[in-house]
Length: 420
Image 1: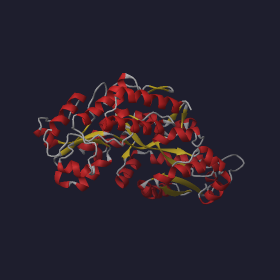
Image 2 (image 1 turned 45 degrees about the horizontal axis):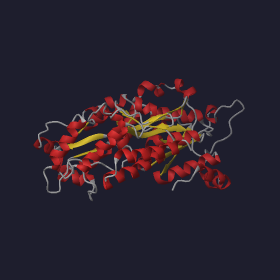
Image 3 (image 1 turned 180 degrees about the vertical axis):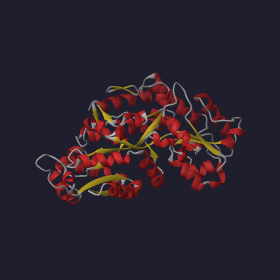
Image 4 (image 1 turned 90 degrees about the vertical axis):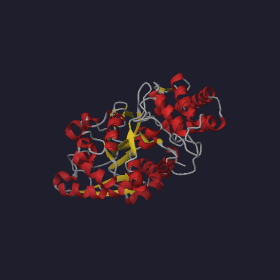
């Protein structure tokens, strides 16, 4: 369970001792307030990255250091499951990294905790930070009120994966383009029988229902007022539940999606770009029998945008060097190198013009969907709200609870969370 900010602050003295080995290692600024690097001395820049991909970050940092010999970059890769609490500890002690990776859903919480520096006054100094360089949805993740607290680093979105051969056999020569077509295709594919279905609806995916609700015209929130019991949201939940009611989606499949996709048990599912490599690696026998497509449309075909930003820790003593490093990470050529190392997708639009992405039809679809992708509401309470939704939705698809009744109750809970 994540620790609360109050708990962490209460343990500040202990936290200071714990973090003595991961502070900025910074020498005092000179009398003019300049960084030591300005005088030619080497500065150590501490960078915290998250997850498996962060283990490749030292390779990129090595190239940065070759170009900037007065800056030594020390990378610490943190597992996602411990990173949140370690960041809270760093906030409490005011000792931590200079540059930190922020999952986009964490931005509101750590902005509220005064952990992230407002970069707005610095943006004009670096052409790499120009908003026009990035997809609009990615820029949205970096803003909190009037402040800009990060720079987009890498991105992901959700698209439709489908078996081209099985859809063609069911009478579809291309991917479904509308909600009605998706429902029709799922029913016809499920009609094959013998334990086969039409589509997988991931009931553990927090963003799925909110994404479909936006497609149905929902704003989700109006300030601190939730709109989850309004027709647009209720209609989206009812639509998702229809796949379970008519038997075209399994409630509990009991196997991973890649082998189910390979065997044709699940010929359609919605997921992110990481699935491209997994399918290619684990199911090479269906190489020419599957494809990706942008999501089917109702009012819109808005998808959910995820990924990570790079932020500067509020208490760094090396702001200029931190910004220089983030600017380097924002160069299209650096982002393409990062793609090669980690298979994570670039946030800069210029990088998407590279043949490595434009010549691959599946990645080309990801790039197209990015133009209609938005992050989940940047509210520090939204993750709790999303978890509450999953509980409400389970009552609907498992126990046939009334959708409107459940959404009325869910909306009331969400209002309480937003206003506590």
